[in-house]
Length: 421
Image (cartoon, rainbow, N blue to C red; front, side, top):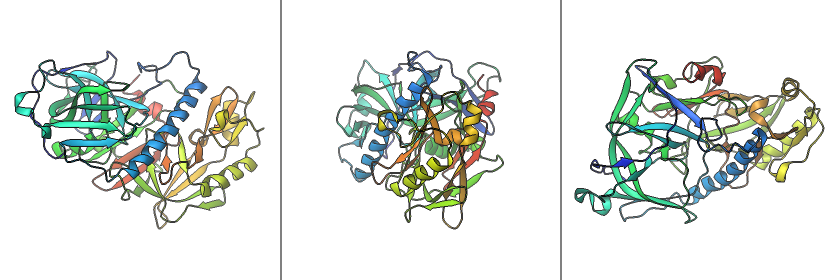
């Protein structure tokens, strides 16, 4: 997908009506990062309790982990017939607003650190322009199980990031000639108005912003815990710098799939106990996965150590999905948090970054009164994942120019509250 298609004329973009904001300044811009179960999401199921939503997210996470693993197996797949990309179906967790065209049309799209291509649902009753009718302008985004696909034209448009509620004047950032797939045909069930790829590949939004603006190739997010009714925040440009106290930076390492943000996990620590990871152990940092997936060599001793340290009665794991659960009926939330020891991830070689996971990063309530470990044994080698529960209340910044990812503890609800109340 190296060529840029001609600008489509007369394309009508379909969109949901929703309230989202963006703030733009000389230091970059920020947009809402909306969890699919947020009260602001049109895809929230109001019939589910909060624990039930977490359990559903855990189920989606298992499907996503399998999909990421299949993508490794298909890393060398390619096609000479136009722009073709075969992918695996990936459940998602977060969405963002995009404003496309002139005048801008607002759309709510999946925001995915595990994908690159931006594609949006388009409607073009006149068919493809004659100037863009050959196969080089067409794309096919085919999912590996064959049940889902999107196809259309590789196009360019102006993307606008602005403060749409007028609280900060008329400042806006317009980025011309953003390449995206204008989807005219979709097979299967898709949620949202499209997908914004935030991965490491050339066509991702972060790479295109770096190529077409002075913002650089960097972005960050701060994920609000599931239990808090507030939006998370997604930052681009200088604003993505992670400068909070306790920030830990580690190099990104090469991956079989360029899209994925991969780091080297050296060990897992609880107190004075250290459990070494297998040699040269790559782990994907993925906002789209709920759970964290690690090798049995790490999960088994972790479960054993936590079982000994946490003085709570055991509980049955729902659907045997999670490896360790406790009965917390009648125990206050603050009391539970005080009973769970910190878990430290040591990343990078030569004593690199240490990321400390608090109780909210390692355990979740999946049934009323049932608290379970959100770290599970790797089911789909060779892909290990640091999921979004482990990243809650952290400012996580990706700098593709420097080739690093940085983690810092943060109060994400407070950090985003000035933007999204």
